[in-house]
Amino acid sequence: MFDPITDEIIINIYSKLALFIELGLPNDTAVNIYLAGVRSRCAALELSEINIFKDKSINEIKHLLFDSSLDRYTISESTMTWINLLSEVFNNKKPIKINFPKFIYKMDNLPERLYSRKHGDECFLVSNDGYFREIIKSTNKLPFEKISNINGLYFEKEGDFWSLCSYNPFIIIGNL
Image (cartoon, rainbow, N blue to C red; front, side, top):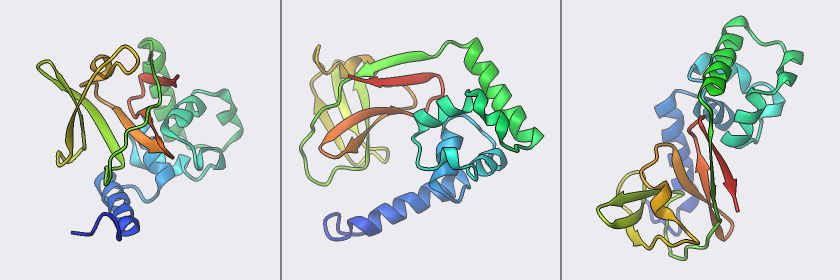
């Protein structure tokens, strides 16, 4: 147990370490490639060595995976099979585009990610571990109800704003 205010750096390191252990991958790039849809640890690790994937979001990696510019890189046959399989599934199942505006949510000690959930007539922002749960109002401007309970969608804080993100390869996010 760490103090969320004074030990923020340590908390982030442990959270990141837990994610690496859970997925069995050694770095952020490999994790983002895996979450973008390449469900092979070996393939994700191999692709993480290519500079075009460094410091890219999951959404950006999705677009790069389907870009023909990967032909100029030396990629193993098994990794190409994963990319082709993902591309085939992606092309056969039309991706859904979800637009959601960035918003400000002022509260201290919030987790890095928040998920929109709906139970009955109420919408909530919740943490992955369930320790944080706050009732929110769904409006026309911020339609939380429309995106609640969709697997792979979460909000991530960027500066003062929270943005909708997705690790679901069949959902493309457009922030208004």
